[in-house]
Image (cartoon, rainbow, N blue to C red; front, top):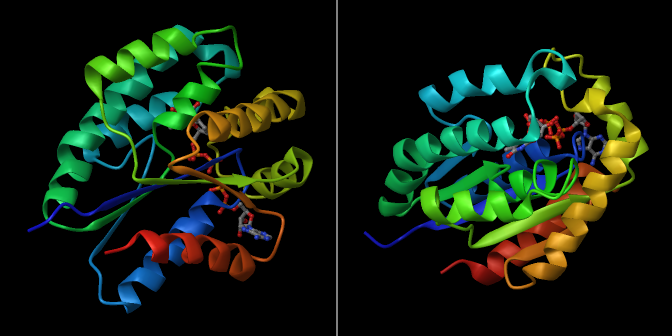
Length: 207
Ligand code: ADP
Ligand code: TYD
């Protein structure tokens, strides 16, 4: 069985990542592909337990350094238990967030910790997606969508609109840094239009 394809969706909170990850999964399934739809933080039972520590509670609950360790621990479990087995089985793995989120959220927005993030990634993860979609949009519009959900998982949304602006620039900078795998997609359009832009790129990459 050949190696499957590994696709990540990235972007600010409420930009439409999980909507697009679902739509892409459905389209690939209708083409007869086996799809593993997953998310971070989470994606395996152990990593879902770590997720609760990260997304609930007061914004100042963890320092950026502690967050890096927790997100990387969750990612390592996700990689071992879910991503690698599915790829080895030839599946299409679609994840709602991966290491680029740590590079931006912990590495670039609250002090310059990018080198720490990169070192830990090299030691503990050492894997990048084949394709990354950065869903880009105005943070005020995205924040309105995100807070409307009232999920109880709003610790990062609670950092506010200025924080979301920094995140947006951080993701756009990453797209320039990794032009081979990163594609910036305008997320302000209808879900179907965004999905069509994504699918055009995926189709080019699929065997
Ligand atoms: P994320 O995973 O990036 O936080 P979601 O996919 O959960 O974003 O979308 C956040 C909210 O916005 C949801 O209520 C969703 O239904 C809605 N939404 C998603 N995509 C769009 C879109 N293209 N246009 C309008 N609303 C959208
Ligand atoms: P997620 O459930 O994707 O939130 P949303 O649907 O609102 O985009 O992720 C939860 C939060 O965790 C989100 O605010 C981003 C943050 N996060 C990091 O700070 N670092 C990371 O490495 C990851 C994966 C997520």
